[in-house]
Length: 115
Image 1 (cartoon, rainbow, N blue to C red):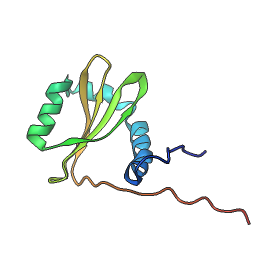
Image 2: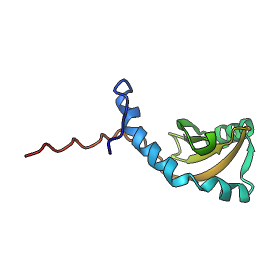
Image 3: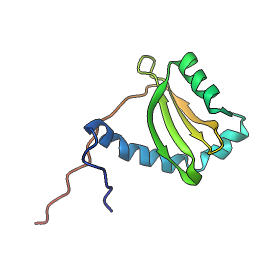
Image 4: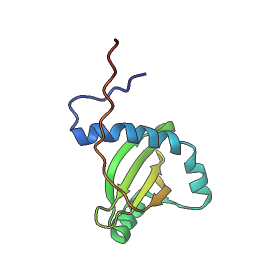
């Protein structure tokens, strides 16, 4: 199965697309457990807290199941990162967070030619 990545995207974004797809697949079931810990609030409050407390800005975005918006926020200065899921109604839940965030621009391996 080949992953379609538009060639018009900058190299950095093309490298992030596969990572984002894997991330979305891994966290698809996690918003429920995040909500159980009451790590949810209106989107503007969450974004303000991530920016003012942790210096994090949005690094990537994708659309998950049930039209939920999945975003990765990170700080280049501290390396902290947070993954959020926002429901269509505007409630944002924290799904995961950590340290040592790095931006990667990895390329897909070149397909092998038949002998």
